Image (cartoon, rainbow, N blue to C red; front, side, top):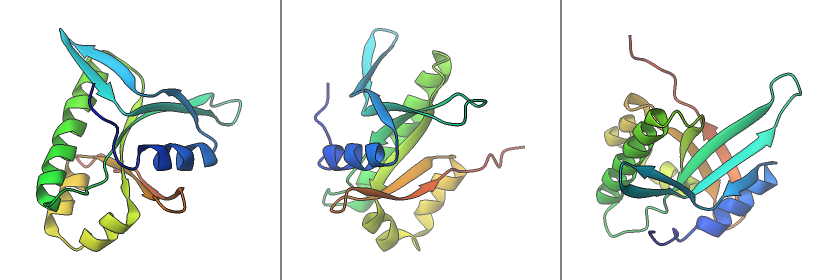
Length: 143
């Protein structure tokens, strides 16, 4: 199992403040014989007629020496995890959580179009205040 991200606990607190219950920390799955660990699995009860929302979240601090290398790793993990969740028919919407500050500092970078093109749902959070700042759910733009 990989080490928890630098902001794991801060993000977990932010998510709980939004009314989510963490079900697994981490969510442990297998892809064939390979164990896979997605940082968190959470759910929250919404209107009675809609039931529960269920999500899985990969948390990244983007604190390495290279933003682009951190982005490659985060996008790669996200895509692999999405495939595994789909193959296992594990009904969870996958999100990538990242510090709001990192997103804002890089939002003019053309490479961030990767999030939209690859339909990577984001949760932006303030690691100091331990609050969620924004949910970005990408729309399916594929024909």
